[in-house]
Amino acid sequence: MKRIAVLTSGGDAPGMNAAIRAVVRQAISEGMEVFGIYDGYAGMVAGEIYPLDAASVGDIISRSGTFLHSARYPEFAQLEGQLKGIEQLKKHGIEGVVVIGGDGSYHGAMRLTEHGFPAIGLPGTIDNDIVGTDFTIGFDTAVTTAMDAIDKIRDTSSSHRRTFVVEVMGRNAGDIALWAGIATGADEIIIPEEGFKMEDIVASIKAGYEHGKKHNIIVLAEGVMSAAEFGQKLKEAGDTSDLRVTELGHIQRGGSPTARDRVLASRMGAHAVKLLKQGIGGVAVGIRNEKMVENPILGTAEEGALFSLTAEGKIIVNNPHKADLELSALNKSLS
Ligand code: ADP
Ligand code: F6P
Image (cartoon, rainbow, N blue to C red):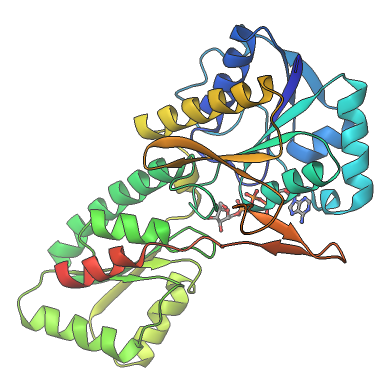
């Protein structure tokens, strides 16, 4: 391939800029031309497609957000939007596209693949909920941000012997809660992947204070319920401790990316370009046991494909992401 493009889509994630930079610089060093598509799939359909050079991605590696901007564009789930997008890419002479985004963005990349347009998916989301990779770009930074915030909450909660429910992001996945919870020595980690009994938590908070604990930190994944709702249910179940709730929210999506996210993004961006250079599209790049890997975006579960399609065109997600429940068991023995 001689001319490729890159876009970011869905919720932004720290390290997306580093990934764009890697795509652009690797493409240039492979002798390819590279275009930036602004505003995700919305920009693809609208033809917001402009050439990038090495200088256009200078000074962005240390910044979160995405300089190509991102957009939620539900119209891309319709065939008409997908065909219009491909038409725009072809009009600009683009032969392959790198899509950096989360689960929804991968569905878009799957449709491009289905229509025969070479797309490569890079996992850019703080949620770590993408199939085919151990880690996503942005997860490490989000966990670090949550950890720093919870450390601060612990300082004040100790002074007042308080219980805190801290809600972290992750959509339907408990990964951020598990990692931030272990990293901060949380008393409880509550995730959507596991059941829990409110009465058990009430009992454990009470027992903790009776044994001389100075605070109680409960890290709650947003996929379970909101911190406010959880706090109310705790009270209804009989908790008598001095309780506060905190929702960390979008601070988890910002801040300078960690070294780990910058390196991951750089490796994945460069790897995607090397694949396109060889004419390989229709795959999602991941990291497994510290090595770059790729899986087909569309195909059969046996081939390791992320998605299959039924005869009616319905999407089947093969081997959906699962949070590492060993981390939950670990926290139960350490807390
Ligand atoms: P994320 O990629 O972070 O999961 P979204 O779920 O909002 O974020 O998806 C990002 C974009 O991907 C959507 O706004 C839409 O343009 C595209 N997209 C999502 N689902 C589909 C789908 N089923 N088919 C095609 N495109 C999709
Ligand atoms: O997918 C990333 C994420 O930050 C989730 O953790 C969260 O549920 C969602 O996006 C928030 O979306 P928005 O930025 O649209 O409020």
